[in-house]
Image (cartoon, rainbow, N blue to C red):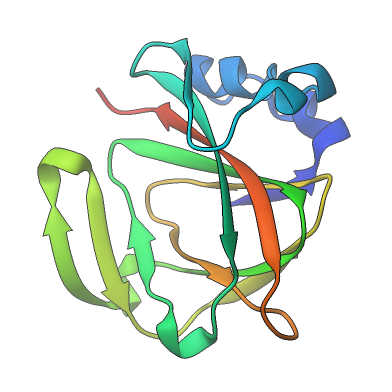
Length: 152
């Protein structure tokens, strides 16, 4: 897990070439060009980004998700949300879709972060993440989510 400010994105270059491609895109002009629900491919299925807008939810409605082949970068554009992170080994698996690289879990978080505009969170395989959580009541948020293939 990496939690940082957008302006620090290039500090994390060198971890993986596909991650580098995503981090190099964390620039105001690219982020402003994103349209809600439209997938933008930076390198085909290896690196792509989608902007989402939604209402945050209460903790009891949330669940953890994890991936084995992709890492995610959650980059807050507008609003604020809490994201919980835990290792999947300490959670209960409730759904598995290997073809979609999606694994759902229930359980307790190990860490929590609050993302506000200008913040990003990188969650690697091994970082189950519960997203969309309210901080102090429901809020409309808009964020960019990069999907980065690191195993394949």
